Length: 108
Image 1 (cartoon, rainbow, N blue to C red):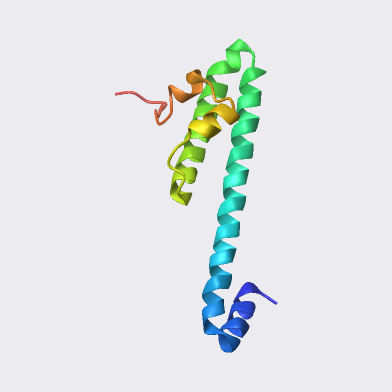
Image 2 (image 1 turned 180 degrees about the vertical axis):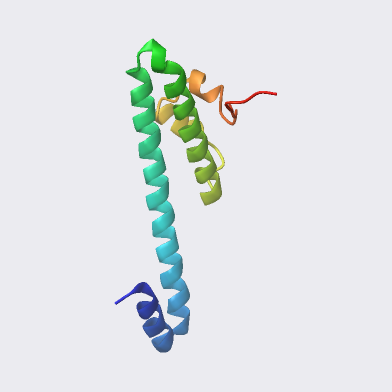
């Protein structure tokens, strides 16, 4: 049975329960997505610490990109302050200093 079939059945029995079931599904998806984003950040930060100097710039750029995406995703869910996760994940000032900066391959 698909989610749509389940929602149709719930709507027929108790219309208000359909909204609750859908809200629960959305909340679960948000939590799962946020957890995945955090795991990507942790992996990138670990990789940054193990990177040789000639690959460091690209690893740093990747870590910054993933941290920025994680922060945006946290804000979309409603978490506006990042101080706790910066400390918990040990996000370095070096990574934080470049958040939001976009580097393109071309300059004019």
